[in-house]
Length: 426
Image (cartoon, rainbow, N blue to C red; front, side, top):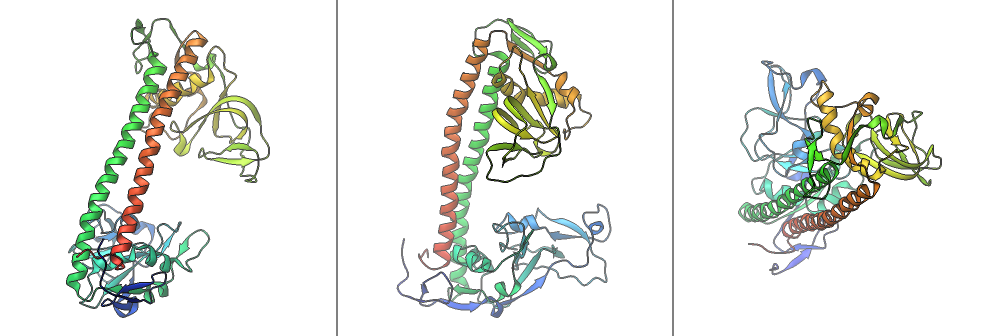
């Protein structure tokens, strides 16, 4: 990449030098901060049909975008006599508070003329008052590694991390001398980041296809077996259809015992020895356990319902709203795990009055129909096949994830190199 002819020392911390003709300013001397919505209660937001509804930019629109998405707005009641700050084209917006360091201090720029738009209360707007500054270029620079680092020094909080207003005001920026040059650099980054984003999106779609392939393989093997020439019969289960004619169909109540955790357990010391299952299906470490053996576990309510399953052989404890299947009779625990993971949701959705299930009950498990080969050897063959296929696909998944990480890192590095003058692109 081409370099600028000459560089000079800079006041921007963690950036050694900038092109000789670039201009250095503190943010406070090129514009001013203004507040988001104030004095609002929960009853003021997203009330369909209210004549006083006005649009505002939500927190997520800033957190997820470099440029504000005009199609991702929400509504708030603003009465005629209210004093609230309106946003305008070219304004930048900062996330002043967040639960994590990845989001706090992020900025986004508005590049559309929108009528009477406001800003959410967790953010600050920044209005540029100098006509020699291109707002898109400045926003790109604020996303550089150096400027992000400088903004976050001193950000603190317990449940939420807060960015100090003076951090934004006192931040040094370094700008090409003309708005035309700044605009040209921003346009270059628009093109390059769009190309990278398209590649990342393609890889993410590939991950979805891998997961679909994995689901299809597991479902086929656990309900039809791995012999494509086997004779089939009607299973008697509407959502399942035909199964190999030598397979059995039994209610889960006859294949294992089913229970839930005996107490409302709490997080324990995190340097213990055994896995501990909580309601959300995350795994912590504890120094005690309530069960030792093979079991299948899934959440009884919340986000883990019918989505997160665990097959465990060992010592563990588990929450009172986690269901455990154990003491298997005539069926392999690992085979049942794959079968339950892919098929239990079908039966539960059919019997539930809701379109999405958020709570499971013991009768749902007891009455669930399971189809399986009688011979333990065939069950083991199916499990081995499934695990080999999962390993094959997971290898491709990991490679794709690493590529996404590399593309994301390259995108960040490119922005940083260009907007700090380390490489010349125009």
